[in-house]
Image (cartoon, helix red, strand yellow):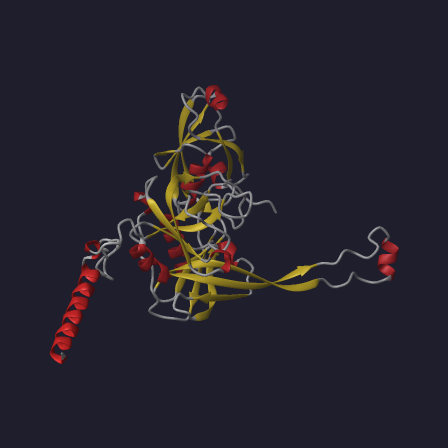
Length: 388
């Protein structure tokens, strides 16, 4: 009897074991059970980049983008006491002193040289009394202004650190509409953020943002705090400095503007070398040719810049240029409109002799003008002496 019981228990144990194996590997063989099939899992590979990912571009560029925090004192004057009664004003003495408030703002910047040079927007640091830079590795350090160029809205800062992760400059001349782009910055102070879009347009000008405009337009989200940050290509190379947005709400609406890296690089290098940007100037006021004006000058198309005003005794007048002339070439390069004329003249070195072609009375005249130095604060979009 004992032997039979032993055989029975062993048989039951073997059957239960077989049932467990079948239930585990062949659930469909057991009545009342349902197979879930085989779950396929990807093989983990931390070095692989998912298709369509821009993680490598972001990884390459983000260490070079910094957060900038500025502070300045803002004076808010009180309204005058009894402004309609001068006698009472004298009786009660001077108006009360203005209130002084500390105002803080934020923006972004890009490390352009490992020796501590940072490129940002002029409007980010304009009027700042103290500038703090937060690096991607968590370090915070004070920065000093090396120089600024309000006419392109660019500025260069310097921090007392070495061996910083400088960004790689791309070639903005090779950028085309439809290329992918990443905008990197510190929007609304939430921290370093990467947004994705495409290049929507090139050569945007006459927006009234800066004196010298040649913007890259992108639909990558750019918001307050992104100013001075990087616009990079799909390889993580810098192609622009984010500067402005078109918005009716204050937030991104898919129209952002970046200063091309070619312009930013030339301005940056001159600021680092001399502390400022020196531009050419000939002392004229210009305007675009309309189709009606072009027809009156017997031109086949409205190309050129109409000289509408001229500074007495300035370089252009001394060279023989007169109001009503149409400037069509500078240094044998055609001029399409007033903005291009301004860009061409400003690119010349003061003291240089420039060769001009102008139309006067349906005749082409050639003149040589000695280029002067563009005055600080010259009127926007005009190559003229600022009003005193």
